[in-house]
Image 1 (cartoon, rainbow, N blue to C red):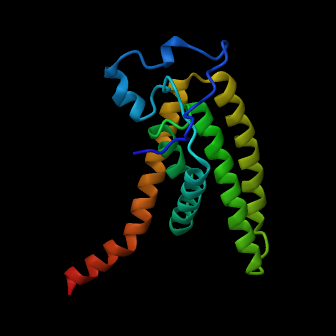
Image 2: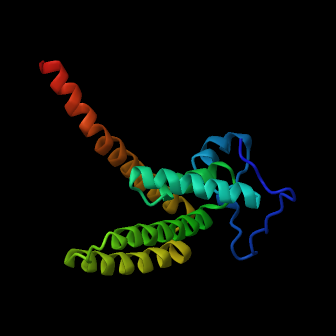
Length: 178
């Protein structure tokens, strides 16, 4: 169950943003709403304590798993109806940026230098981020963003499972051979 703010108010979409095709029309749309394929008709903001608690919890999980946190935050925001798809993508992008900066600070406090590949990857990330932000906010329909988001989450989840399970699989294989 998701907790929302006491007033439960959310700003309605601006007239130019409203598109009847992307909003829930019947109860049969619920499965698509739950997985984020269509935008919810109404969103509510979480309370400040809830938002802080969720942020701390997701940051903790992302630190444990070595991810940016967006793979946890985006589905939660959509499932709890705290944001529309475009908003969730924007917020999770900012969340990942903040977590990445925190990770870099931790990396540099260990008195390490920037690897040369890191500069090239950072340049690519900046270019990709600007291009993706433009396409996501102005060009792509909500359905396209939803499908891309689902694809990224599936890839991230699979990588997380297979990366973390690789040592376990090796230990099981070694135990079977004994």
